[in-house]
Amino acid sequence: MKKELFKKLPKVDEVIKLPEMKELAKNIDYFSFTEGIREGIDRYRRGILEGNITTFEKEDILEEIRGIVTKRSQFNLKNVINATGTVVHTNLGRSLISEKAAKNVVDVITSYNNLEYNLEKGGRGSRYDHVEELICQVTGAEAAVLTNNNAAAVMLALNEFANNGEAVVSRGELVEIGGSFRVPDIMELSGTKLVEVGTTNRTHARDYRKAITEDTSMLLKIHTSNYKIIGFTKTVTNEELVEIGRENNVLTMEDLGSGVLVDFSKYGVKKEPTVQESIASGIDLVTFSGDKLLGGPQLGVIVGKKKYIDRLKKNQLLRALRVSKMTIAALEPTLRYYLDEREAVAEIPTLRMILEAPEKVEARAERLHKLLTDRGVACEAMETEATIGGGSMPGETVESYGVAIEGNSVELEKAFRLGTPNIVGMIRNDRFILDVKAIQENEMEVVAERAAEITGKMK
Image 1 (spheres, helix red, strand yellow):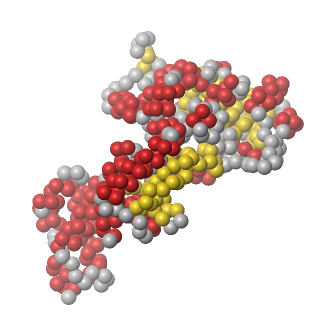
Image 2 (cartoon, rainbow, N blue to C red; image 1 turned 90 degrees about the vertical axis):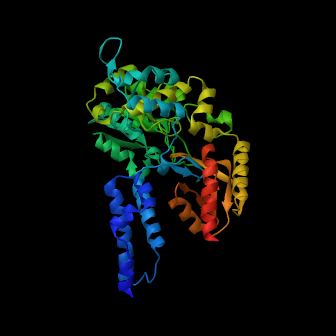
Image 3 (tube, helix red, strand yellow; image 1 turned 60 degrees about the vertical axis):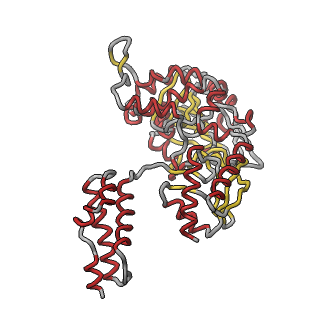
């Protein structure tokens, strides 16, 4: 029996010559194409040997090969449709940049550019010059410099101003961000000695004052953007910290994390402290991320007093942490939107999704429901709760809507996640739900088609 099955296995050359395989070969290099065919044949060979395959048709093995070759032809980093209800999804790439920003990136990286060339002077320039003035216009800061992420921004500042010195931090602000990166560890790598003050839930101005010694180099305030302490609590305001710093001639710095440039409370969403407010409080340096609530590319931004920023620009560590031309190309158009808040809210995808009126989200859910039912998919439109994500606004949810697909929730979740395109949804109360909060308008039809295909196979 096995001999007959082995004889039915096609040769690699035979498969290559098939018309449908020639079409597949157009989208993949020859080596990966032939290896994919071999892998498909080998899978069937092993299945026969192990007794798992007792019969098959030629089309069965070709289907296996097509799946393998198609997967090999795709890039590992690829588009994913976010139906989780989390806007700034840390695992799904965080913020989406605007079309204008994306176009600028392509324009810049597909030609030579003036990254570090001053066209007016005809000599060497600085990559930071392209956006520094713009950052200052938006935030109200005197100067700015960029790093490749916010952890790097904090590390650079600590290394420059608190290396071999002490940084005073409230115990309630010693955060851990994703991937087990902890503030105390970053401080240690920067050559800074951590001095904890206060308690987990209450820290007073007097705690900072008592901790200051001749070795104190920095008073560091950290916005606890990924968790919150409620109940019997007390924190020191920026203004209080600035006063203490000036009294003792000690630099003050705030790590804002998410980098909000718009007052969310004006749009019915919980308020987060803005960069502008932090600068206005008199803090010497402020660090924040570019790819969270700002809605730009991944980077860290340090803004503040010019005399301190100038020192950071001369720190040798900056070269190891500097941003690329792609980052700057994406950041500049994003920042320009912030010169007019209405434009920022309308054109920056992350802001638009976070601040979108609930009735618009509901209308999109109803549209998806109709697209699905028109294709015979059993489903129900429903109200959900979305989260902002990106390690920001812990415990806060915003009104959202989605569609629950009827069927085995675990099987549906896996089928949507592993298909093409990859659609990541969520399971709630044993129901598989596609939350439309972060589904883009041009993805609606795609989601409906894929849902019809998946549920059709499960019937």
